Amino acid sequence: MNGLDTNILIRYLTQDDPIQSPKATEIIELRFTREHPGFISLVTMAETVWVLGSVYALPDREIADTVERMLQADTLVVQNEQQVYTAMVALRQGWGAFADALIGALGAWAGCDSTLTFDKKALRLAGFELAG
Image (cartoon, rainbow, N blue to C red; front, side, top):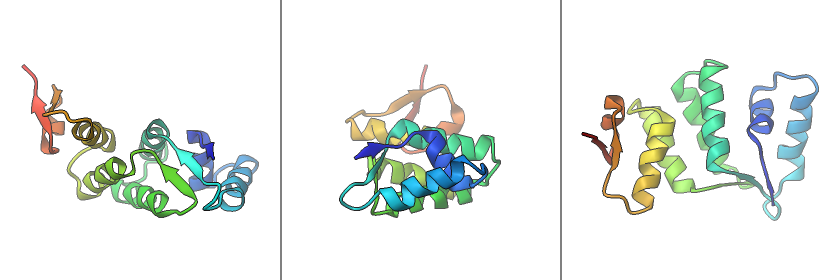
C-alpha cells in the first residue's frame, strides 16, 4: 500500500495541471488495485476538503460528493472511514464544517464524553460542548 499526499488527490480531482494531473490519474486509476490500494490519511482528507473549498471554491455539497466517491472506491483505503463518513454527512447537510465534524466524530470514536470548543458554529454538531 502507498499513501497519497494531498497534492496527488487535488491534481486528480481538479485535472488542472497539464503535467501533474495525468500522472495523478495514472497513479489513482492504474497503479492502485483492490490488492494494492492507495491510503488516504485523515490529514490528507482534511487538507483536500479545505483546498477544494478554499482554493477552488467548490460548494459543500460537491465536496461531500467527492469525499463520498473516495470512500466508495475499492482501490482506496481511508483512515477512520466511519468518522470521515460522519463528517461528510455533516458537510452535505449543512450542519457544520468538515474539519469540525471530523474532530467531533474522532472524539466520540476515542471515547470522549464531548469535544470542548469556543466555536459556537461547532455546537450545531453532535458531541460538542461550549467551553467555559
